[in-house]
Image 1 (tube, one colour):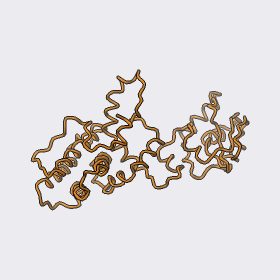
Image 2: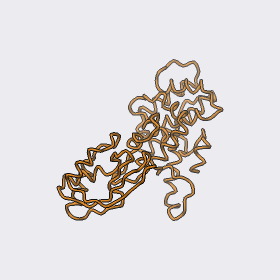
Image 3: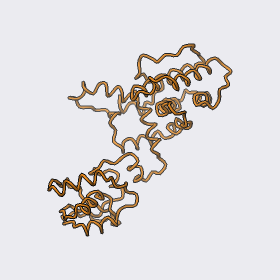
Image 4: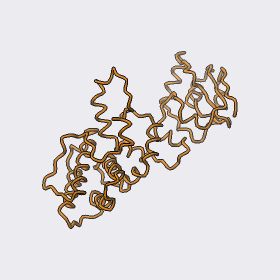
Amino acid sequence: MAEITTKRELITPEKALEYKKLNFDKNRKISIPHVYNLKLAMLNKEWVSDGSDIKFDIEGRLIDGQHRLEAIIRAGIPVEMLVTRGLSHEAAQVMDRGKTRSVSDVLKLTSNNNILQVDVSVLSGMLLPISYKKNGFNKILSNLTQVKLDASNLSHEQKIKLTTQFLECIRFGRKFDNYDNGINKIAISGVLARAYHCKFTDKNKLNKFMELLHGQTRITTYQYEGTVLSCREKLLIDSQFKEGLIGRLKTFALVQYVLELYLKGESRKHLHIPDDLTKITYTVPELDDLFL
């Protein structure tokens, strides 16, 4: 195992340019606004090391610090920094950064190339009611130690780990993810993923439900199939389903309610949004127990 070393170095613009040439090819793109802020801090003598300035992996590739190096080049002045060498390939996934990595950034660095950003988004759809419930209780819990995970504030690594664990039902949820513009597909995919995970759900009927909701078929044999088409129209034209988080929750609640009717073979002439927006009909115990 390679030895990890850290030492102080005076990074001149010339040395910064040399180090930048060693940049890891999967590293994120340079953010010019972030570089500009670092440059100003350096020129005003306000930049302070946080102990994680420049990092290289065991193959000598730059895995952290490209924004700092670019700022030195643009400022045209030398800056003393801590330089660490010999880090493992996995280090880039878990290190804190001067600029926070997005889910997309972390996915590029992970060894699991099967996970897509849209998969992580569907996980967020599955957690919508829990996230809302947590947000509603945040003021009450602010002075308490929260033992459970906070669904509204998961780290990117936690999201990717959970997405990997529930990938089968997530992929089913986004099987028909090309919904019409104006329909909240993440909320719908979250409901479908939950329903698929439930072992008591008739998977054939669930597929038919998705086809009706998606608009792939408009031919109905039973009244309860017409209820799904009514739900689709309501989601398309009613503005209350497009209003931020509340709109997502209302979409989740209505689709879950209509799916429950559909699987029972029941129909409704007039659809209404359930009073309890945080109700979860199709539970995923292995997931929900982490939060509730």
